[in-house]
Image 1 (cartoon, rainbow, N blue to C red):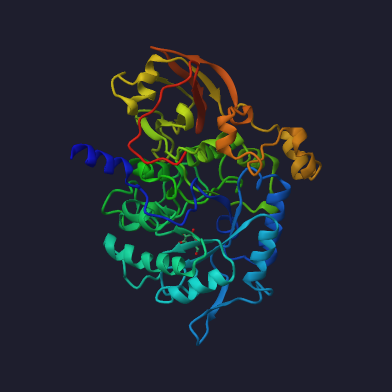
Image 2 (image 1 turned 30 degrees about the horizontal axis):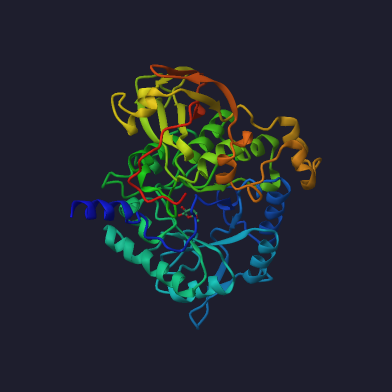
Length: 486
Ligand code: GAL
């Protein structure tokens, strides 16, 4: 009896999503953060070309997602009408262009009578709209939360509202990645995985590393009073919100920390690297938010770091989690300042370690092996603490500025990318690259740590150090209570 129970616990799938998509977090581009309602078919096609020519598609960014503001009312037949001034050739044509370039096409709607920018919403028209998306060959739906007619406030009410679209999408027979955008309301981290491939856990991100803002007043997604997630949420605010529920993300369904701000201009280079690293480590979808027609070399070489992306696309699909937090550090003019240490399991027994310095000054940070492997056994009881580990710095091999500039200025054409040691995940998927120990996914080895030892680093203000530990002696077999898809 007991063994039967254990077996069913081990075997039960922890995700109810069965559309086969987002086995690792989805990657791509979305126009909203930099362009808002300024959308058109030319924008999508021009952006896809940049993604292709810069090699960003090859490292994994393969969904091109159109956000709000694309429709022009609803016809008397109940079907939504595409704005022909912005999309003269229609959506099926757009999808075809994107598919021909090797991309998948994403669109947006809201589980409300209107979208947030007050265009037509899908509430009570889910069936017609799902049919339209499928008939246009759409591959992804971001589904927002504005104008919901008060149908929220209790988890089951929100679940039911979002479930109608999930069922409508399923009924079309077309695999469509379903991405919820209800800003973390009604404990979506507890039910999102039953019907969706990802779910936003906060109000809208804005282009600041740590500035607090009244419009983003909640700091904890598990707080029942956090019912007005708002907007203007900083990177640090979102990290702190998701920290208590990172374990909800797993293959097929992910906590969505919102689209990336990398390249928009409001943060320093170190802050953008920290933002990107944390999104990767927490297994958030990675949707570029910058206007890529203005792509800079510096932005490219953050977004294209394969050693960091490999963490996000790790086949184990486990988020890192916070193992240490220190609030007793230098504060900025808003009273904000803290340091955090994150750690988490990676494919084949590797381990991720991140030192996040959000204090208002440079900091010495350190973690012992006992701390790093605390989740495998507290107080130094984990087998991994008895092992020796090579330490790889995942940012040490960031693409150099000259090469990045040459690519951005089209001085290096795609066929020549191999010369600059380009990582192409369409030829060598991350799972295979990791298995083969591809050097481009390891960054640079900077040392070793063994029993009783610790990792130490000087971390600049508002920056991260991001390390992969790989066993020198061949690793420890991990026992997992989760069904895995390796
Ligand atoms: C917000 C959403 C944003 C964007 C916007 C469009 O609710 O969180 O990501 O989609 O609506 O109006």
